[in-house]
Amino acid sequence: MDFTPRRLHGPTRASGDSLLKRADVTGNNDMPRTDYQEKLTQLREDVLFMSEVVTERLQMGLDALEQQDAELGEEVITRDHEVNQLYLELEKDCIDLIALQQPVAGDLRFIAASFKIITDLERIADLATNLGEYAKQANRSVFPDVDAQQIGANTLTMLDTAMEAYANEDTEACYDVAAMDDDLDQLCEEASEAVVRELIQQERFEDEEELEGLMNEVSRLLLTIRDLERVGDHCVNVAARSLYMIENDDELLY
Image 1 (cartoon, rainbow, N blue to C red):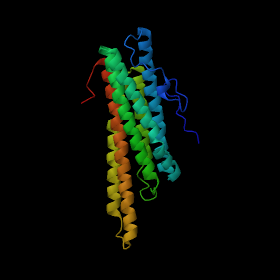
Image 2 (image 1 turned 45 degrees about the vertical axis):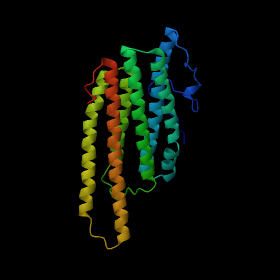
Image 3 (image 1 turned 180 degrees about the vertical axis):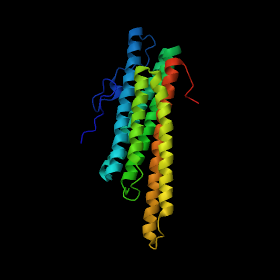
Image 4 (image 1 turned 135 degrees about the vertical axis):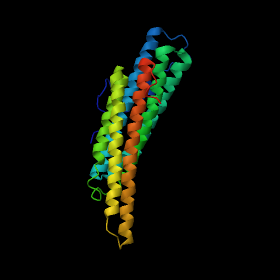
């Protein structure tokens, strides 16, 4: 199965092409203005590329959970290092741009926002690995009325909208993500309550092994809901940083 990131926001990088293969600007304090602007454009494209990789990993984690596919879940876990490498390369790019070019005003906000956004993207990828781990032992038949996939679909929409806000400097999209998070929080609360309600309604178990299995599944499902809610929080962070980048407005940051 091909998990090459989809072309969501613009040009994507060929698989395996390290960001660090680009020309290194270290030691060049006299970078021509056109080259500097190209570096800023490249940074935006690279952040968007990273978001596409993370989106794919989140989708893989959700698919593994839905299909109870342990092999796919393990793939999400073992490939997390790729996202970590992207993060480290982009972190270096941001530091180099700030240290060597001493940007001000809008450029500085853009670079700082990009650095914060890649941090949130890396954490979303970590949460996707959690989903991969849960998928290796999950039993969806225990709580069939709890629709974690719908919650997951909402987080994917939020992530895509947040990155569109960043890519297109769309302030309306920033506020859309914040509004979607309220809906996500409600879904997560209802799902958690459904798990607890069904647990209370369960008949007493004479078999301790059966009871232990149920409690493990309860724990995994509640952790899944919690992690998806956290993905939504990171999406709001991306939107908030984008709004600050665009309009120097910290309304969504606090």
